[in-house]
Length: 292
Image (cartoon, rainbow, N blue to C red; front, top):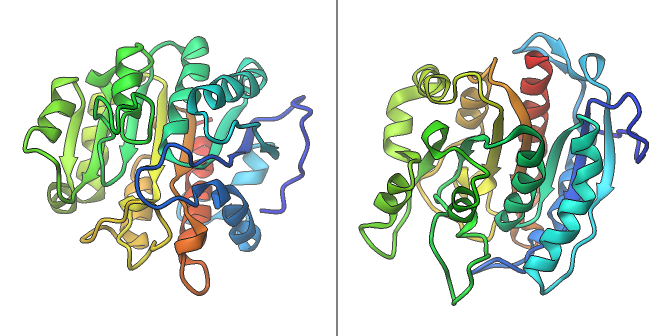
């Protein structure tokens, strides 16, 4: 959005933060280049949001904080660097909008935010629940994020909603495992039948007035709209459907958000995936702005 790249947090309300990390992917890598691609695609974005009737940059002082340091090849060392890098923003009350990076990075974000806010409500649009216990003998990878977060007490699963889930599974128990942790899981067919208004009603009933972390995995979108991602799943949502779902959530108490799993090497001509991610990021900033 051509935001100023500064690290002085005085008077800052929100900050875009890149995390160029994809060591924890299980299929197609490349999400380490996601922050750069999202930034490039965001140059066309304008500050006024007509649907929510708000000038985002008038309502919020927003900066581009740059990229956090990572340790390629070492997920847990990256978590330590991320937590240290996010702490000044969280301590200053700045809303972090993180651009990923694979979905493993969300765990470090939640650790940093939970130290200030306590257990968070999760609102999550994705084609996967990311609640496996381990994968390739690894407890920290992009498919275990929300199980680890629940185990660490960073989230309140009873106040959380995961929606858009679809695709083949390893076992019929995969979704039951997520529900057993306490998450409300809404498969894609059910979400499409619900529509934005009823989805938003379910989310509000679930999260109440708790602080909310919103995580948007770009593979929530159908590969026709977002081919540039590591684990694409067919029969997904259009960008128009995604935007309608986001806008229906006006009023939730957002304290942090991310857009993850953009893998530019697999994007198409015109960079539709990066463009979609940049616009989702703007929608999340707008939701934060109207909640102020």
